[in-house]
Amino acid sequence: MLEAIDALIRLRINHPTKGWAIRRCMWVHGVERPIDYLRLTAQYTLDGRIERIRCPTLIASAEGDAIGATAGKLFEKLACPKVFQRFSAAEGAGSHCESGARALFNQRAFDWLDPVLAASTASADDGGSLDEHYRRSRK
Image (cartoon, rainbow, N blue to C red; front, side, top):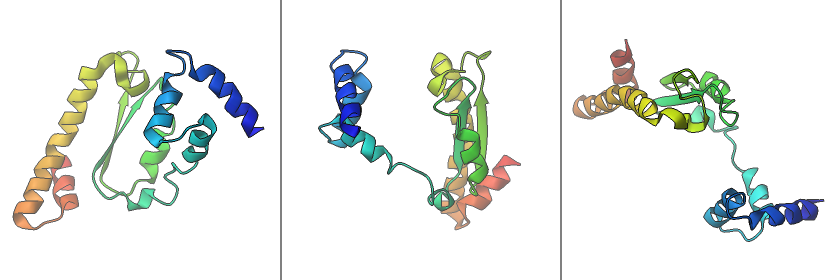
């Protein structure tokens, strides 16, 4: 069965545009066959790792992005300082990676990042924790 899947993917891989994503993934991960890449994807999970995330985290979610549909679940599981930023189609930012309104994404991301970096600098200056400074700056 897996060999049949591999053969089907190989048919698509030679198309200049339709095969680009799988070719890129195979190249990035250093594998020769599509099925080898698919096997590797099982290793990419946050199960057992979410609780280890301790830095301030921005979770962005575009309303029409099927790939990011689990962003809310990730946000709820995080115990670190966190912000959930939703992007809408009405803003032109409802697609994957907010690609229709990159400037809006950048503005909101940098607006979030400013107090995070300020807290980081403050904690380095006075020995306090980044979490404490960040939480105070968000109030």
